[in-house]
Image (cartoon, rainbow, N blue to C red; front, top):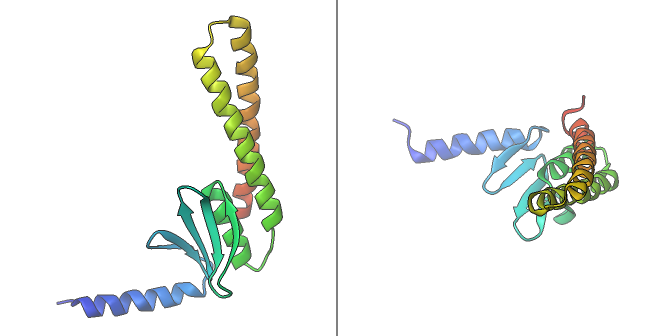
Length: 141
């Protein structure tokens, strides 16, 4: 019969092994990659911390940006400023897409609707392009 203490010891052994690998794992309300922790704060977005130096590295709006920063820092690369710029642009195009979609729902003018459809498509394509760039940092393809 497995007791709770044996289960806790097994969990500690597994967590100890994961601390030195670049494999992300969830622990509580955070995602850890080596000594980098990503936490979600509903008001502030995603916060990235370095537990070794006990400092906040960055704050992002999207989880994919936060994971890309964490993975690159855990791998020894520092592309934080570029990824923060991608996150900022992604937020801009995301908000544009939400705005244009809302205008399309509420407008009764066909000319205005056609213009907003084009702008919505542009914003969605820009969002996809930036997301693909961020995914390259995460998955490395």
